[in-house]
Image (cartoon, rainbow, N blue to C red; front, side, top):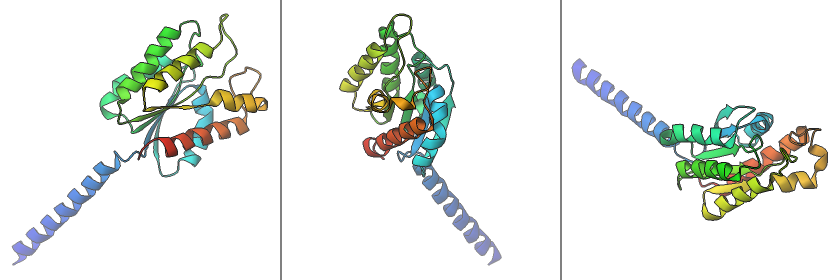
Length: 196
């Protein structure tokens, strides 16, 4: 009798454990996992993004000097186990004269994410560098977005044009109000444009 009770207790415990593991496994693919991959703008945005995306599990990979090709390599290396949503802030540190390299990097990120994942990418605000504007990189983003349903652009350029007082002297980084607004726009894109 004791053996039967012990066995029943053991099997009941195993069923609970399997149910828990199944629920935990299911929770990893619900659209509520976010990889926040980006440069110094991501660093400034991160605390406000966390507040805006409560209930989401956010993994952060930040490098203040991140280039788009760095982001592409990181995403390619994680392709088998990527989060459901990728928030990518890259391009600000790229050479605006080499649009083709940037275009390939964005296409690689979107391709490795695959159609089942959503990529949210704010457009690039930066004064001209090395004699070229960043308009070409933003046009490249728009071209990839036009053919890739899983790439969602956040109009950071438009937001900053409407609120130039956000910008610091370098023309790239912003004040607290700017970072809050950037986080709100990214979170809105994640919540409304990325399936859960």
